[in-house]
Image (cartoon, rainbow, N blue to C red; front, side, top):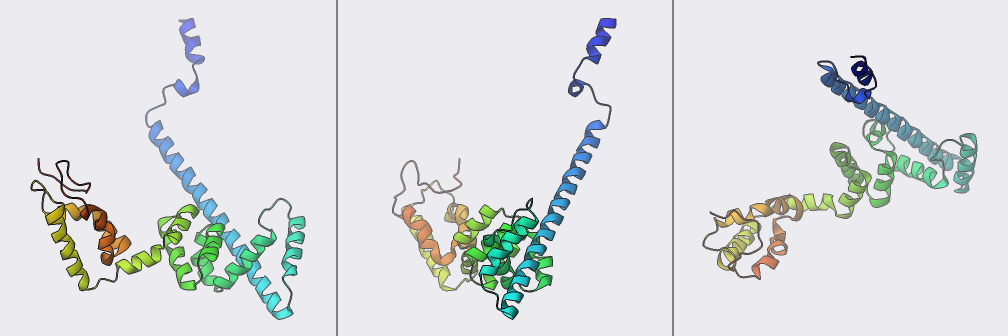
Length: 243
């Protein structure tokens, strides 16, 4: 009996049986800790963005009122890094981003309520990639709404999401005629007798038609498929076939 007791005591804590309800309580604690970490991270980011924006605003104001040249940024970067050697972010390049962000979004209310919800380098990306306030605000709002990473933000800008969504929304009556033409072409050249109605064949493309390319770009989507005749294996099109 003593031997068995010793073996239980020597058992790793991770292998011991927890009391009833312990797993649920542990899960709740994990959620609380993660939420607290996220709130702390957001608070730190907000304060950092506001600080950078204020520095940028001051640089703009002093360069305008006292006609300081561009070299003042290099001097300021040197002095700030000497004063705060443990802090990153005071390079001449980043100080220029601070000035650019303050110039792009001069309203403190907008920075506090919207811009500060994104990490700093998201804002730098918006400055680098976009030329207008309208486009910057649109992508900023989308990045906040969908919690885009910086890489996703860059991809959405480079693939012109704003223009694609705007184009998709501009439906014109003539598109009905274009769509009808391609439905007829699919019926004649692609759809097999065993296929469901043509609208089933198009279901896989609906998202692209509406949200990505716009109905006026139907030819670009279907041209590769229309050049192939229906065969025994069937065309490479998303479809719902009958059994």
